[in-house]
Image (cartoon, rainbow, N blue to C red):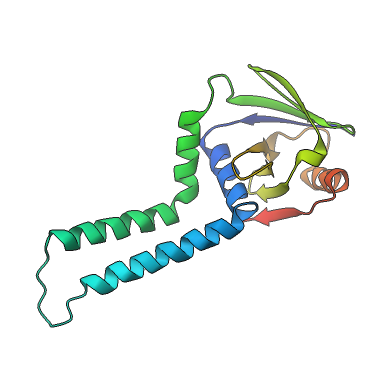
Amino acid sequence: MEFKFNTVYDREALCAMSKGLRKTIRKKSDLYLKIISLIVIAVAILITIPWKGTFEPDMPMFITWAAAIVLFVTMVFEDKINGYFAAKKAIKGSSTVSSTFMESGYETAGELGTTAWKYENMAEIAEVRDYFVVAFDKFHAQAYDKRTIEGGTSEEFREFLRTKTGKDIKLVS
C-alpha cells in the first residue's frame, strides 16, 4: 500500500505543526509554562489592585499590566505566533513538499531534493484538523495535508501508521 500527500507549508500547516508538537512531545513543558504564566499574571493583578481605595495609575503599574497582557496574548495565540516565526525562518524552496509513504519507509520531495525516512524515527504522531503531524523531537516535525491524500482514506492511513510505528495517533483539537 502506498499513500501520497502534497503539503504546502504555509502558515496554516506551520500552526498545525506547532500545535502537534505542543500537544505531544512538548506537553509537559507547555503545562509548566502555562502555570508559570498564569502565576505571573495573577501576581501582576494582585500587586496593582488599589487596596486602600485610592487608584492612582503610575508608570510601573502600566508596565506591569503591559507585561501581563503580552504574556496572556502569547498564551492564547501561541501556535499562530510559532507558525509566523517558523515561516520567517523557513529555507527558501521548502514550502511545497510531496510525501510518499511506502511499506519500507517514506520519502519527502521538494525543490531542495528528496529525503528518505524510516518509521522508527517518528517520536510522536498527532492528527490536527486538516493535517497529520509527525514529531521527531521537541523542535522538528513534518505535516501532511489530509485534504491531498492519495492511495486511501485518512482512516486507512491512520491504521497504516499505527501498524508501521506501533504508536497511537493523538487527536488534537
